[in-house]
Image (cartoon, rainbow over all chains, first blue to last red; front, top):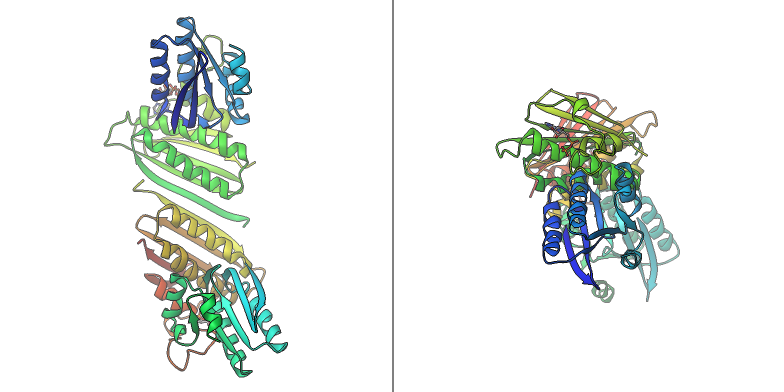
Length: 110
Length: 110
Length: 140
Length: 140
Ligand SMILES: Nc1ncnc2c1ncn2[C@@H]1O[C@H](COP(=O)(O)OP(=O)(O)O)[C@@H](O)[C@H]1O
Ligand SMILES: Nc1ncnc2c1ncn2[C@@H]1O[C@H](COP(=O)(O)OP(=O)(O)O)[C@@H](O)[C@H]1O
């Protein structure tokens, strides 16, 4: 698993490559919090390269979403495959997050 | 597994693709005997695409070698990888067959 | 190949970094028996990750002298996975919350047992040798 | 992943066309535990093919009502494969000839048990449930 993080316009775009699970979720959390600290406010996490996500990966997303909102920022998600969509639906987290089909749509929507 | 058979000069060249084992050795035997029947006398079996060979595959090679020799013909083998070479050495069949490193050398040697 | 049964059995130290490799091994066994793509990408890896991380974090409290034992048996009918830790066990019924209720939706934890139950056909607990969680999934 | 054990267990009809798939499955398990390339390409597939074809052809005489049972257990130390047929068994010692002797070199048969012994670290026979051949190979 690895994360890549880049700036597109004023949006911080994070690609999650591989699994987002208990063993590595802290790394994602720290990276995003560092950017928030630096003053960034718009965040997009792209899951096109992601394998599976476990409950603690979901927990980190919930936590980041809260922290970003507290600072007046926004977190959006993009490119969930059907299995990941089902995971968000099962846990009703699809109601909590703004989820776009493609990265382009997510970027436009900010 | 599949066999491909073609003529190169006056030599019948057979490629064995996949395993040469109890389940398919009859097919190889029949193909070569058909050519012998038609009057062909020079045969080269190329193992560059071959996986493993079991005792009944070896048995078919011994049987073909005898039948071809009875008709005044010759059977040569080429492109045994290290594992197949070891198999021929273990069974001392390396002493029975003419084995060339490459298809070219085998063809030249007829 | 109607009657193939594949099994993986192993002991791992109480460290979450082992989870991904175990999940890959068990998923590969299911793939060999043509489990549905969704089961290979969602049900099996997520439920197994939850069971393993609970065993490591709660059961064994990440103590280096404790191990987690995993046994997975797969055939064309079903996958049965058992995850055993050296903890004192817990109550499966009362430990599960509903993470989809409005008051829980914003919680960061509490989705593990819920997902195991949703993604597997059955989740049971035993005390045979330490605390054992057995999950069963019918092939689809 | 020191203590991984993988297993394959299956029943097949008495038909040699099943051999390749079983060999592929067992070899794959050994590959997952990093057995030497030569063991994966030579020792395991050839010895297992011999054991299976003998079970099908001699033990079960290709009778469609008879099955061959295979159980392979692999860990980082060794592979143990058991092949059971429904025949009455045979004498392992007296059935093996030396196919490399001048009088046998031109024979078409008689290399099966010889290869099993040369390619495996041990070959044993039991009568537990039908005729059982157990072969063991240490990982290298
Ligand atoms: N193997 C285990 N040993 C002891 N307690 C466990 C075990 N698995 C789960 N639990 C208990 O069940 C609770 C709920 O677990 P879970 O639904 O996975 O949510 P979370 O792990 O996010 O708390 C845990 O907080 C823990 O108290
Ligand atoms: N599973 C078995 N059941 C009964 N007889 C067997 C079995 N395996 C081997 N044999 C006997 O051992 C002999 C030698 O076997 P093998 O060395 O494999 O050579 P081949 O199969 O070419 O005859 C066989 O001819 C058969 O009589």
